[in-house]
Every structure is written in structure tokens, then in C-alpha cells.
Amino acid sequence: MAKDPWMVPVATLRRTPGASRRELRVGRIGRLEVADTVVGEDSEARADVVLCSLDSGIEVSGTVAATWQGHCRRCLVEVEGPVETEVRELYRQRRRRETPDEDEETYPLDSEMLDLRPLVRDALLLELPLAPLCREDCAGLCVDCGANLNEGPCACGHPNWPEG
Ligand SMILES: [Zn+2]
Ligand SMILES: [Zn+2]
Image 1 (tube, helix red, strand yellow):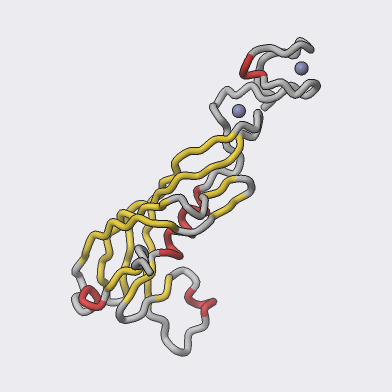
Image 2: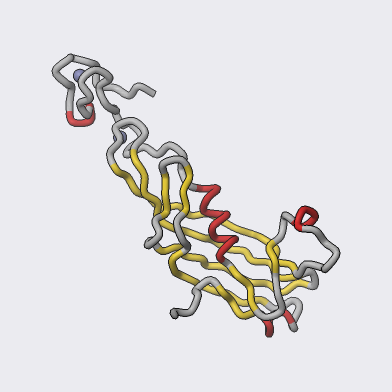
């Protein structure tokens, strides 16, 4: 089985508060879906981050990116585009008495490995476009005949302009 690209060894880093290390990781992140927009099972995501060892845990900051696919909300053609977003999150070892509720702003950390996957998935999910357009001035479909008005006026003579 291939090595999981999202698992980062952090034992050395954790022993050296103040130290930091850059990690560039690329791999499948699993299917992400918001409304009709998806990052497919087979598409690759990328994380370019710096891990910084703090007394309280490890801060991960940098950018994550992927490619999404969807359909234009006006003319329904397939569209795809890039999603890229900045992240800055803390991974922290949970104390035994803590409940997940008190700790929901951070990601879990154990002494050996840090799992970037939940951070990358969360960040991408927040940035996926809910209602993408094939282009800003997409004219959409004729409400009567269904013609794609980007290809010109249809036979019913509807004006060739976006419905909004
Ligand atoms: Zn369109
Ligand atoms: Zn028409």
C-alpha cells in the first residue's frame, strides 16, 4: 500500500519548540462535495505548508489547493476550476479530561504523526463554489426552447442576455 501523503512525521519537530519545517504534499484527498460542485475521488489536492512547533502543539500554515468540477448554474455545461485557500490551524494533543467540544478549534495531534487530511478537506470544502458559472457573462438557456443562448439567439427570439 502506498504511503499516505497526508501523514507527516513530527516526533523530531515536537521535541524542538520554535523549530519549523516546510512540507509539500500532493495526493488524493477523497471525494468532496458541496451542492453540485465536487472534487473527485481521483483528483489530486496539494498542500504547501509550514509546520511550526509551539509549546501548545504544532501550527500548520500555508496554502491548500485542488481542482473542482461542476455545472454552470445558468447554461448547465460542465465546468471546472481551481480552488486555493490559505490555512492557519493548530494541532494540539488532547488532554484526557477534555471533551471534543472544548477543543473544536484545533486538530488532534499524537506524538509521532500529524494527519493533514482533515485540515485539507475542511479548508477545501469551505472554498468550493456553490453556484459556478462557465463565464461571468454566461447567457444561460432559453426558458422556452432550452437553447444555449451563448451560441446565439434562439428561434423564439428571446434576448441574448443573462437572467441573473
Ligand atoms: Zn454557462
Ligand atoms: Zn428559445
